[in-house]
Every structure is written in structure tokens, then in C-alpha cells.
Length: 100
Image (tube, rainbow, N blue to C red):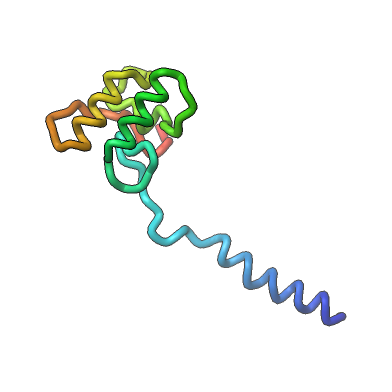
């Protein structure tokens, strides 16, 4: 076996276990947390407003459809903003993990 092959095998043995481990500090999606940073903030409400207006936005329906009516609307954005400001809000996402 040549030195190059040995180095490649050693690298593969190190890289594969690193790729297989779950990421530390991985955040589980929260209903209304459009940017998935672990907090519901005004920027999440703005992302929902953009999604409601069909503008480019990172606001998955599973996370931003907070009233669970099957679409992201201005009502969802208002509820996310209310939640960010710690005001009473409707938060009823069906499943934010992407499962059933």
C-alpha cells in the first residue's frame, strides 16, 4: 500500500464518524421561528409577511402557518409578531418537525 492510499484511508476513517454525528446545539424548530435560531423575534414576523406576499423568504409553512389553516398569511405574521412582543397570540402549528 502506498503512502497516499494510507493517508486517504486514515482520512476517511476520521471524516465518516464526524459526518455521522448529530450536530451539537442543533435547534428543534419552534412554531413561528422562521429563521430557526431558537427565539421568536420581529424578524420572524417579517419573514412571514414576506412569505404571505409571495416574496422571497425563509419561512417554511410547517413553522410559519401558526394558525394551522394550511397557508402562510398576514394573520400568521401578525400572530408571530404578537408572540415576539409577548402579547396574546394564536400559535397552533400542526407539526414543526416536518413529520406527520
